[in-house]
Structure formats: structure tokens, C-alpha cells
Image 1 (cartoon, rainbow, N blue to C red):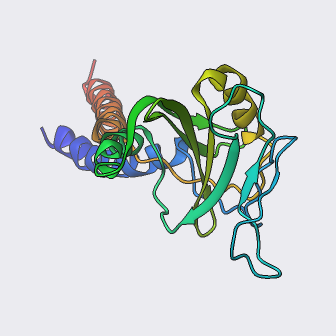
Image 2: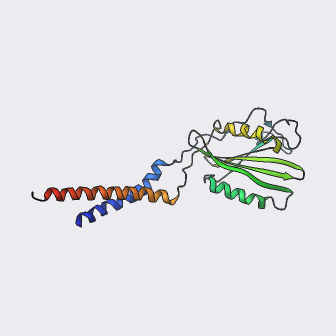
Image 3: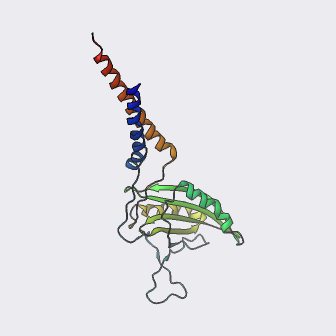
Amino acid sequence: MARLFHAATVAVPVAVLAAFSGPAYTGLRDRPAGEPFGYAMPEGFHPVKVAGDSPGFEHNVWAHASLGNGGIVPNVSISHVNDVDAFDDPKLAHIAAGMPAYFEGTKVQWREVRHAQLQRRDGALVGLLEGENTLGDERFRSLQLSFPDDRGASLVTATFPSVEATHWEPIFEAPIEATRGVATRGTKKPLWVFFAWGGGAGLTSFALLALLGSRERRAAVPA
């Protein structure tokens, strides 16, 4: 019994240590970008002169010539938010759920097309949220990419006619890998991951110590 108690006293701290160190070791770690954010703008997009711009104003809107299908001119805008949380699936779903209310009181109707969290080769996670917008007889898409950076998150929002979705979607997603100034955020893990690591390590150490104690007792018994 004393040996089992000793095994348990060793197994408990091992389990606690594994519960916290295991998920941290195997998961993504925060890594700063180390440089300003720079979206790899697709070819054919040029800065748009906005009314009221002052000399030296840094443009954050780019437009492309119409493809001839009418409707809104394809354009890209870049903004920034001081949000250091990852734009993971639950957060993107929450944003999508609130979008119809956001447009309430306007003539724009919004519905979700898709949302996803895309992982770059360097491990950085980029949020994607696409919506279908209706304004009278006009239908257009809004595709937003959320890039973590060293100050929060840079939001790249592309707007284009819905009939051109299959043309523009891959064009705006292709630069995700080439975009510079993207940071890596450590991912939040569900509670069961900590229990799995802690329980597995604790039970393993307990079983090994109990087995060693049993062998020592058998070896001590005279033949």
C-alpha cells in the first residue's frame, strides 16, 4: 500500500506538468511578424483616389477594371483592428451570425456563404469570411481575410459582383502565402486536450512505478 501511495504522489505532479506542458509543446506558439503588414495585391488593382485625400495620404483602397458584367467594380480595401485574438472558427461563426443585424436599417441584405480558418506554411492562421450581399437588384460578394499582425489584425476586404465569384475568389486567396508581415498566434485548445495529456502521463507513470514496486517486492522474497 505504501508503494502504491508513493506511486500516486509521483504520478499526480507528473500529470499536472503534462497537462500544461504537453499542449503547449505540440501547439502553435506566438511568433511576431517582425515587419509591417503588406498584402500581396493581385495584378491589375490600382490605388483609388478618394475625395478629400490630402497630399501624401496612404491609399487603402484599390480597384480593378470591370470585367464587363456590370454591377460593382471589383475592389480591395485594407483596414486594421486592435484585436490580438485568433480569428478561429467560433469567432468567425459569431461574426457571421451578427452580420445581418449589422446591416439592419440599411438597404443591404447579407447572408453567409462560407467561413474558414486557413493555415499558411509558416503556421500562421488566416480567417476567411465570405458573404452574399443584396442591394435592390444588385448582388455582390464581400470576401474578408483576417491576417494577424504585430499590432492586432489587418483586414483585407475584397468586393466583386456575385456572378464573378468563381473568377475572383481564387485570385484574392492566392496571395495569402505571399503576404508579408503576418504573425502567428498560439491556438486555444479545448479542455479535453489538457485532461488527455495529464491523464495519460499520470496513469502511465503510476503504472510504471507500481510495476517496479511489485518486481522489487518479488525480488526481496526469499526463495
